[in-house]
Structures are given as structure tokens and as C-alpha cells.
Image (tube, rainbow, N blue to C red; front, side):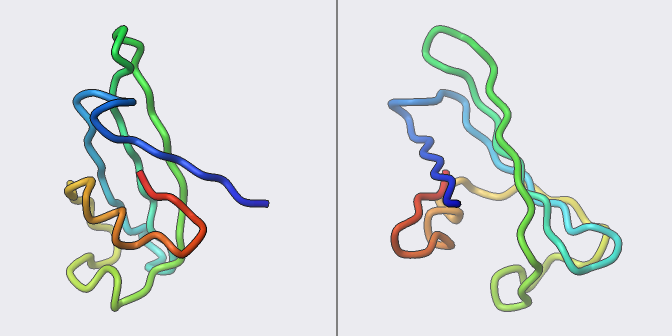
Length: 82
């Protein structure tokens, strides 16, 4: 099963992304928030396995905001990141 998410200035406004490496250190929670053009709030979230090469400055238990454009670079071929 594949889930595709696409968020850009044409689909969501005021888009932001936040990373949270869970305390066990094995997983990273990613949340993306924004609003539709008519003002409906949107929250999309998911969890990915921690990879030191992808998240080099994210210690276990830490939360940090991240630019949305970085998520596009992490997507795999055939997938779309927000």
C-alpha cells in the first residue's frame, strides 16, 4: 500500500513541518500542518524509521521544525513528499 501526499503553495497555505525523534531513538514522527485556500486546517502525520544519514542532527527525544522543501528531497522515486 502506498500513500502519496502533496503540499505546495497551490494546495495548502501556511505549510510547516515538524520532526520528533521518539525517545526510543528508532522512529521519527513527522507532522505537516497547513490550511486549504478556504481556511480549513489540515494536519498530516506519519512515522519513519530513524536513519542517521537522513536525520544527522536529531537526538532521541528531540523535536525540531524543518523546512518543507527538505521533505521533497527525502521522497523515494514514485512517492511524493509534502
